[in-house]
Length: 136
Length: 370
View 1 (cartoon, each protein chain N blue to C red):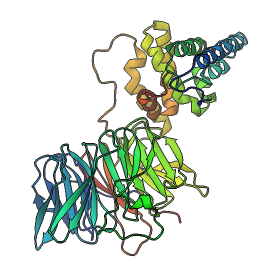
View 2 (view 1 turned 90 degrees about the vertical axis):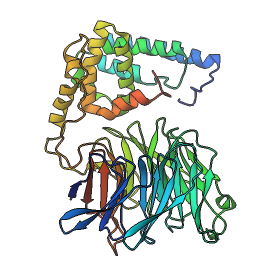
View 3 (view 1 turned 180 degrees about the vertical axis):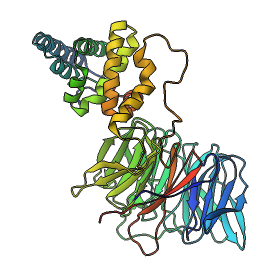
View 4 (view 1 turned 135 degrees about the vertical axis):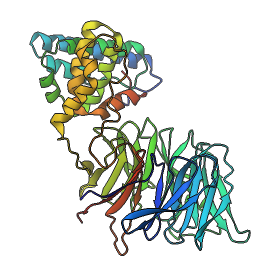
C-alpha cells in the first residue's frame, strides 16, 4: 500500500486515495450510528496516506479522523484497545487537531493526548513531531 | 547489577576515555582542556591538564595497546598525545578541515584513527614512519551534513558513520602501505573512500553508530526515539527499527553480539537484547529509580502537562516541562558518552562507564547471560 503513494503521483493515484477516504467515511458513519466510536477511529486511522504530499488527501483524511475522534467518550477504553502501531499516527492527528485552535476540538485532543502519552510515552510525541516525511 | 561507582568530576563532561589499565580517566570538562585523573585508593587526583586546543574538546580516545591519546576539538585540530615519563607530549595532526571536528575513534589495530566533522567529511589519519608525522586523508563525498559519530569494523578497514542528514554510511578506508590485503576482500573494499552501503532508515539526525564484536551487526540511534539494527550490511542488509518509549539515545555500546546498551536523554542506560532468531527488543532500564514505574509516571506527566490539560487559557510562564527534576538515579542529565571497560582475560564485556552533561562519570557492571 505504501508503494502506491510515491512523491510524484499520477492523477489516478490521488483519485484512488480520495475514493478510499470517501469509502472510509461512509463506513465510519455506519459505525458511529451503531455506537462504536472506537472502531470508527480505528477505521479512520487505518490506511492513512502518510507519504502523499497532496493537501486535499490530507485534509480529507483529517476530516474523517476528526469526525471519529470527536465521537469518542471513553478515552481510556479507546487507548487500551488501540493497536500500538497506530499510536504514532494518532499522535500526529492530535497535533493537527491542536493546531486548529477550535475549542471543542482542542479540548478533545488534549483529553486524548494525556492518555495517549501515558500509554505510549514521550517517544511517541518525539516521533510525531520529528517526522517530516510521513505527515498528516 | 547496576551503578558500581559514581564520580562527580566537573559541572559538565563532553566526553571521556580510560587508560589501558583503567587506573586513569581522561575527560573534557566542557572547555578546551583535557583533564586526566588517577585513582589513588578512594580518591581521585588530577594528574595532568592537557591544554593545547583552543575550543571545546569534543572527542577523546585512548588506545589500549599503544597508550596514545587522540583528541579532537571544535578548533578543527587534532592532537595525538604520547606519554613520555610524567609528561604528555602532543603531536599536531593537520586534519585540513574548515569546520569543527566532532568525534574520533582509534581503529582496532590502532594504526589509524577516524575523525568525523562538521565539514561533511571524515578524516582518516595514519602514521607515516619516514616523515615522522600523522597524515590525514579526507573522504569528502557522500555526506550531506555533519558527521556525528564514527565506528570501526573489527577488520580495521570498514568504517561506519552517522550524520545529521539522517543516514548511516559504511566506507572502505583501505590505505596502501598501512593495511594488508585480505584474500577474501572484494575489489571495492580496496578502494579508499568507496561507499559500501548507505542506510536510510532514520528521517532525523542519527547518532552513536557501533558494530557488534563480530562485525556482523550494525546499530545506530535516531533522534526520533528509535534504534536501528542492521544485519549483514555488506551483502544482504536486513534492518529492524525499534521505536523507544521515551527520549532519544545519544550513544550505544555492544556488550556482545546479542546485547546492546543505549544511553541518552533519559539519563538511564537501556538494555536491548536479541533473541535466538535475531529479533531485537528493549529489555529494561539499568538504573533503579526511587519512583515506582507506571502509576507515578502517569502523574509525573500530568504534573508536567497539567497546565496544558487543566486550563485552556494562555499560560504565560514556560515551565510546563520537567527538565531538572532530580529523578533519583545515577545520572541527572543527558548521558552523552559510553565507553567499554574490558576486564583482562574476559571475552565478554560486562563493565562500562558513562559520562554526561551533569559532569559525572558512572561505572556500571552487569551479568550477561551467555
